[in-house]
Length: 224
Ligand code: G5P
Ligand code: MG
Image (cartoon, rainbow, N blue to C red):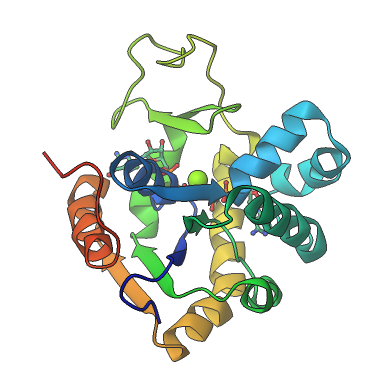
């Protein structure tokens, strides 16, 4: 449980396309909270062709989970390097009970957010997603289109569609998610630190998350 004035050790969970990246980037704009996405870390490593990136690519392209030891080392190292003395929030990690236990041993989580969005809404969203791989910035042809079609707003670099966003891979990812995450969600529920947000629109879920987080961490930038 997060004590008043304590450091935030948070995770944001939710099925593929539920809006974890979208909500995390808003958290980033409004709070002094480091946000780390395991998927962004993996995609960055894949583009750079690092040994981890090379190993992870085949799992990601098939919509399967990357082995626990690879992702756990990557995330815990990144937290060690960037998270010291900061509030932090992990997006996409842990994804299995073994990962949750490894994180608990390294640095116990004190707040867990779960986004619950219906599967039919998700499949439609993911079809329109475009990503700027090196920064992790996300766009959607309808929800938040880039200023210039196919280009990142900040760098002007080309956007790409994730290989794992093909419809058959999305269905597999939803399936994998349901099977591997239930024990993780149960783990945080039993620890008394789980808060769930249900809805079909990130714009409605976001103010609820903002208000909830504001009870624990002072926002730098208020909601408009
Ligand atoms: P990731 O990268 O963790 P997923 O599958 O968990 O990927 P994903 O797909 O990144 O999750 P998200 O972040 O929850 O989804 O959703 P998002 O990107 O914010 O929103 C989806 C789209 O909908 C975007 O285009 C957004 O603009 C749009 N959108 C958002 N809100 C709305 C709305 O209200 N309305 C509309 N119309 N659109 C909206 O993991 C990828 C792979 O990496 C590996 C696995 O292989 C995994 O499959 N991996 C791991 N493997 C093992 N262990 C781990 N811990 C791993 N982490 C990653
Ligand atoms: Mg994401």
